[in-house]
Length: 502
Image 1: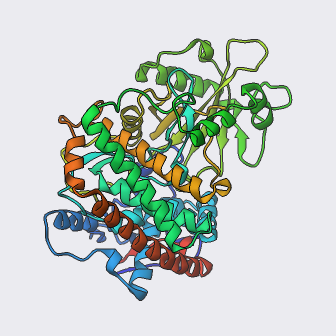
Image 2: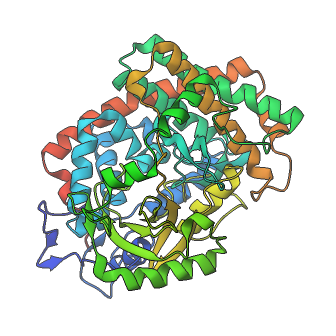
Image 3: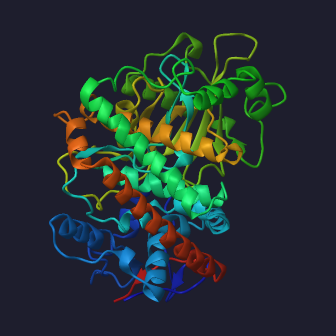
């Protein structure tokens, strides 16, 4: 039986859920907190304490059965109270450690999800993918980005510190059927075009259709000319909409950006704010960490990074949507110039398991390690990505490392006309096609995947219609889920965890 007692203390029969130390990896902490619970979520006879409920193994079995062709029902078929309870349990399970730690950023995340349906979609990838468990097992496998939506594309630095446009979030990256990225991406465009663009149903479908058509047209080209590895989108080879975004992102310069957002009054380190908490006393600790990171990751240090001397360190709070409540640091690296205009910021972001893990059809292609998996995705899907992109473990936590560039930016969806929405959606579809096509270049695939994708697509118009109809249904389901989430959130449902009793 699954249950618990409301309240922030997460107390049951005099027992308090263990609060894991800051030095533990989220997955290690999960194992520690669930060590009295077996794979099926049952409490072990050796311990009378209730354990945190987990349906991960149940969904793994469901995905395998679905992928094998068995006629099994998926959660997206649930209705009424059954669906509402599934949504509640999934979100609690996905955040059980953050809830048990009384993490105020996690509680802030739930407030953010309640306030916006697009934020709810962005922050509940596990809910979305449990609805797809085992789907499309017959489709060609690619390295999927995992969390495609309109705001996970943007401007970022390549290996030469030149701004490029591409996918900028690989937290959920996983090997899976190519359709999974298309279904989440099309759904994301449908929801964003509703909540941000304010468009009616017909125009939302046209925007989603542009995204899928951009993909199908470009993957067909790659199947014949094999040009996917030629280059990323730069200002000189981008469509006008993206070239304008890159040009705008470059305005201001590094010195102005550092002074406005990060430097303290003397430019000797980070300023203190609600979002930035300097921890200068830990400089030596992070210097050792950065030195180890450079060595272990084989980073070729560019001249602009000087000797990689750590100037200051700060905790970064309140950033992201799905990752709110996870550990994040900013490390200031002193540049070679004496005028403090060229310091570099590195971000260390706690990595966690992909929402797709255990839900995708069985595959021979796996990358071990949370941050290592994310780094693999970036290195495969960007022709020449961020030079500092890498991973390191510290105090048992798996961290993703990347540069916070002064020209990192994404498009302002509020400012787009309907024509520009369609153009942007098409471009994002083309970028995704390039990312998938690179799966057999630097990825784990040992065969030419583009012709297989083209063959699997078959009649393009029928394929596009299938994906858009899926997105339309997922959009409607998300609307109902968000309404139920808001009701549960108002009743305090997400300040507690589900527990399993003997």
